[in-house]
Length: 382
Image (cartoon, one colour):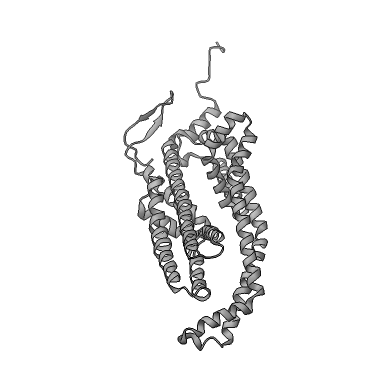
């Protein structure tokens, strides 16, 4: 008789699981609430400390993540030929890194030579400027002033400090480069495992939100990076062609400088073509060439490419944001976050659009047991 008697109530563990899965917040016990609060506080503290720790290299990590995914086709092609994942990943990164290093070393050497020459020929430079002022009566009163000499001295002194400033930034650059390379290497080798792990941590009920986030973020990132690199290259080519046409020394080095500083807020290619135009007027006595460089640089590089073409290409390539919102993302992102805003601005607006699309979606999608997607009708409140 006793063997036939069974306890009709489910085990305590089963009741706890059912309450957690189907119950409301009001049904939580005090220990469960305490455990949830402690977990949330610890999670916020750890996440805040982690973000504070990586704040200086977060843009390098994001770039490494993106570059790693975009170089995956090259890596997979090399992997099929070599059969060695580590060797293939190193070769893939070298294809990108070596040409960049060659260009940067060449440009640095050329600019350092010019800076050294300027610092040792200040008097000659001042005489050339004074001679140009004598040819213009409206400026002749300034030629004998001490302010001109101080201006030339301060400019050459600042130019002399540029290589020193670059050397001082080597430590931060080395750390960021290390994070970038190892992140890109890790993504090249372990991209499949990373994707599988992230997908396994997202409950099926959030599948629609996950896919919306994936589509929006990947779209805006691709558009922002593609348009930025393309337009920076285009502006640098224009600077190079103008330098060659007007026979400006260091044409290639100045084009590289224009490409690099164009990523930073406020400064841009105008930081190259405006001083070059001044040099053409004073040292070449070529006001026509200077005016042409200013007009082309301002109308084409600064106005057309930076404010129209870049957001237009980014919006078209992303297939997520229209021209207006991509323009807002690029401009306000750089203004708010600095260099990192090139990516963070579009990412934030892309995330906002993904959340809005998921909340206002007309249908909700669930994943059936055989892995197929099924529409289950209107979604109310997620």
